[in-house]
Amino acid sequence: MMGFSAITRTMAAALLIAAAASATHAQQAPLQDKPFAEHRIVLQLSDNDPRKQGLVLSVASNLMKHYDPDKVAIEVVAFGPGIELLRPENPNRKMVESLVAQGARFDICLNTVDTIEREAGKRPEFISAATPVQVGVAQILFLTENGYTLVRP
Image (cartoon, rainbow, N blue to C red):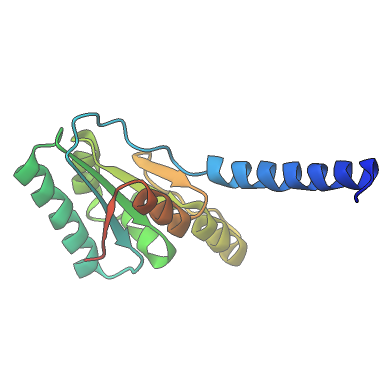
């Protein structure tokens, strides 16, 4: 049988683990507030290929037109080289901002931003329309666990 101090240590350890898990989960962007959305899609962008960027934007735009912006929740998660889409000098900036104005969300992975800052010695800029998330892949996992369908164009 465990003594009182062993039980106390076990409970304290469990509380610390739960607190750490909550802190990690709290760094995810919350789900979009789209109460009438019938479809929820997360688009993954993890490479800096202009054709892939164009394809992701085209898919998001086509979904908005097909379902009506109120009927579809679209979240683009950019990580790794994919964050280049969300840089101020990217030629697709106006299209990104237009989609955000229609209700799409574009997440940028802060782990990627931090890595670039460490390697280059300067923090990269990104557009204000981007929603920072700590871990891009964790955001994708969070979304898929909450009813979003993952599409990687």
